[in-house]
Image (cartoon, rainbow, N blue to C red; front, side, top):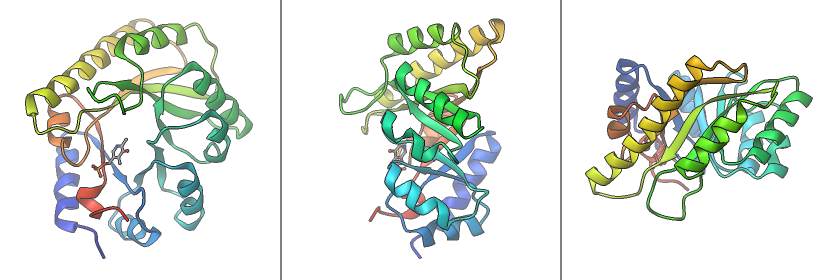
Length: 226
Ligand SMILES: *Cc1c(COP(=O)(O)O)cnc(C)c1O
């Protein structure tokens, strides 16, 4: 069994102390590894690929909260809408419309985060901060009944430069705070802005220092991906 129990318990304690949620990223890991972590009490798991998620989900306990953290195409939303807990990677109004539509078909409300591009690499998805602001402001006027915009998600650069990574987290933290304040004054039924999802195996401590309340950790817990 590849799970690093010591590391897992350490991260669980750190997140408890900081009132943060640990999403165990199980992409490319076998169902048996997810079961082991489930036995230890873990309930939030993150997956990146629709096909992989819909293959694993029926094999695992029904009270797992599945987080979708990969790039999501509109035409695939229907496959995960029956059970997905939180979509971290919304980057367009079109995608929100589709999630709302598929959630309605399933009689569900699906929580979503807006993905913001904070890293320097251009390989990472997400809206630029200004585009994210435009989307957030336009969402207020819309009458979504089956989605809740729950906050923001971002990925920092893969870099050893702590100042650079910290700067990127700070950018997202400031944007999050700004709109958290804004939406607390301008209440909208389908907006409940309280989740800031940032931090992975290499940078979750730094992310929590910058206000993250949801970290997504894979390889540190599960070991290398297969
Ligand atoms: C794979 C992935 C993670 C986890 O990465 P690790 O470095 O293995 O912790 C977190 N977030 C996203 C969006 C990912 O794609």
